[in-house]
Amino acid sequence: MANCLVCGRSAGFLSEICDNCKEKRSPGSSGKPTEKGQVSSFRLIQEAASQIFRHRAVLLLATALPILCSLAIRMTCVAYVCSAENDPSFTTIYLIRLTRLPFYVMFSTICHRIVLLGDASLASRWGLFWSMRETRFVGWLFVLGAIVLVVSFPIYYVIPKLPDWAFEWLVISSPFSISFYTCVLASTYIDGRFGLVLPATAVGRRMNPLRSWQFTAGNGWSIFVALMIPILLTDLIDYLIFDLLLSNESMIVSVVRSLLYYPLIAVGVVVITIAYRDLVLSPNDESNS
Image (cartoon, rainbow, N blue to C red; front, side):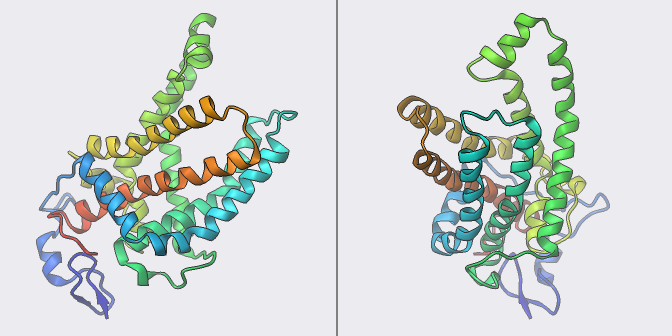
């Protein structure tokens, strides 16, 4: 007998939402909920930070091993692959990212499950765990990545055809690469609109990108702004602390730099969790925790 993900009451056998909550948000012919919630960027960030702080002890323990493994790969690459003597190729960089991907998936799945289902949703609070849930999660990440590539392709197709002076300004000499940040903005908006498939997959529920787009209609820019805040804070920390104050990056600095990013990564992940909870499970801003 499971508890309802929305109100916490008994949901019955093999059900995650009770009959009362199902009636409140039964889908119409279009597949969209009859009651549509509205979220604000400030509330998403505030609630994400609040949830992370509330579950901080469990999150820290449960994500420690995935973080340490990802960090070990990064440090190995900094020491041997990306050293001053080596200039890693585009392929090498992406192979390194693929190696770290399983640990990011574990990290994200843990964050989604703890916020949506509570601390007791984890089989164990320490270790590395993989199941079909994480495999489906990876599949959706590749789907979202493919969508981003399709949207970003015109940018990368047009830029090489520009005159040399324009290419140098847009890509090389600009303090914030316009081409790169255009892709970041596009991918962040896409993640916000289609990304509800990720928390849904983490808790074992059905969702697809089309339904995610429908559920986030009218809230896309709010989610986008909330997701951009951790990204911009990461870049600000990178620039102010590590580029200006600690320009000579040692192994210790690189470790500290990576560890500082994980709370901001967690905020970005949980922003999507809160959007899913409020727009899909609880459009009337009911709390399940």
